[in-house]
Amino acid sequence: MPERIPLYLDCDTGVDDALALAYLLASPAVDIVGIGTVSGNTSAAQGARNTLDLLALAGAAGIPVAVGAHDHLDHPYGGGAPHVHGENGIGDVELPLAETEPDPRTAAQLLIDLSHRYAGRLHVLAIGPLTNIALALEADPTLPERVDAVTVMGGSALAPGNITAVAEANVYNDPQAAAALVEADWDVTLVPLDATMEHTLSEAQRTQLLLAESPFVQAIGAILDHYFDFYTPTYGERTSALHDPLAAVLAVGAVAPTRAPRVPVVVDTSDGPGRGQTIADLRGQRLGPRDHDGARVRVVLDVDAPVADHIVEVVLAG
Amino acid sequence: MPERIPLYLDCDTGVDDALALAYLLASPAVDIVGIGTVSGNTSAAQGARNTLDLLALAGAAGIPVAVGAHDHLDHPYGGGAPHVHGENGIGDVELPLAETEPDPRTAAQLLIDLSHRYAGRLHVLAIGPLTNIALALEADPTLPERVDAVTVMGGSALAPGNITAVAEANVYNDPQAAAALVEADWDVTLVPLDATMEHTLSEAQRTQLLLAESPFVQAIGAILDHYFDFYTPTYGERTSALHDPLAAVLAVGAVAPTRAPRVPVVVDTSDGPGRGQTIADLRGQRLGPRDHDGARVRVVLDVDAPVADHIVEVVLAG
Image 1 (cartoon, each protein chain N blue to C red):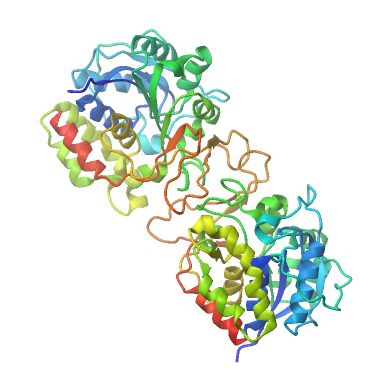
Image 2 (cartoon, rainbow over the protein chains, first blue to last red):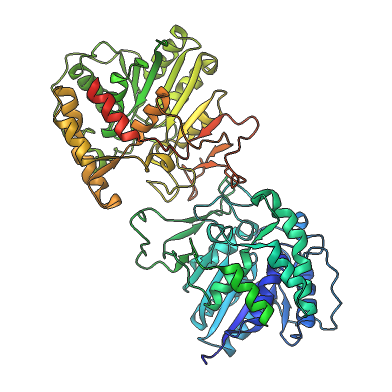
């Protein structure tokens, strides 16, 4: 058996964060060694509450959860996306209140501490705005030396955005932080809307979760209900995009992307109409994927595997 | 027989401009009633020289050609693209020097004058940077009232750019002018790289032009040689994209686009990494093309017809 990957999860739980968490908890390939929350889908504090409650329900209350940045690098938290994720961030499902409390450290400090404990092996998976990661890089610029790999759900390369015509929510919520992340000296796998919008969970699969024996898995199925409502006009049927879960699957290495060239990526931090866009240089790729020398960001454009099936299988088996 | 469309052509001749010109001269659906040149592929003056020489060779020396803007709205002409279009803009082919001289008016004034003569019927086809059009709009804000339709080769919607990761040459060369054009109160058909890169001329088709009886058509075939060299690494074979010719075909109405929603379009005029991008709001189009209420810009995303065959057929028949 290969050693499990020690993984720091940075999240804004969040409906699809909850499904990603369920997948990671059930995956035999990974150990979540710490979780930081950030404002995004909901506030960092609410995201921590949701995460603690989910972990307790899953019998994983021992994983430290640190409350990260409430506000973003150059602007305050904007109030989240209740129309997508519900007022409480998890589709307005009321989970049993866990007795566990957040770790007293900031998320950035937790990440730095874990990078020492798991030096050279730690994997960072960020599925919310990148504020905590940027704060950790600012506090300790040597962080990338101790991190094995970084996977980010965020941005859009050639696909339309979901907040503006060109900007995706995680990056739009803190473009400066995203810029700091892609400029740091580490290997990044960016999982943008180009890939995540192409993988969806069906109502039949959600029903499988609802019918599971585990109250935790049942709760995940229930949490997804509100999210399915939101995505119905987009896809023409009750379903949801698998944004954060796809990034989790790729971080774990359970599935390899079909097309994911390493190319220069710049984040538009201007106040112009392109603010929050992840500008990936995908010129010259007509004859097939082509890596640019020295580029550290791998942009996931296509994942051909049946990702939803895999996620449901792992979550139900866990 | 329907009446021919009176067409003002704004161009930076330019290899693909030359082929577009040949197509328009041969098309029974259109009368070119005036041409303005602008710096882009080459200087406005050189573009006018090339255009006058081509017109004379085609036996169409009576069409007025006005030299338009040498410099762009907020920056000077950058020297053109000799690696793409040759030192003289037409693939370094030496055409017989025509005796005709440019029209004494500016291109913007010629356009304004034609908009009065053909009020309500004039079609504007712009296949270079949009400087002249912006200058005409500035000089006479009532211009759109007298123009029937505007077709522009420019921008990229979801496809990569060709100057930066997100910016196409015509728009990148004068983003402020492009912004003025899309903000004006007229119907615009934007023909971006998304469509133009998908239509190519083959070496066999170029040979057909070279073997034509007409010295003008032979010259077009010769002019394309250098351009084919430039595009070989992009496509993996000797060929060329049909940027300007596709816009001409659509302006004439010979072919209808397969997918061309009317959506909000904003040009990034910032100095950030998105400068010169045409930001088209293509969210919410998964279930099929959807026009936005009030949007005046139709963005051509797909044209399924065999455009290259049509162009060669018309040019050879002309």
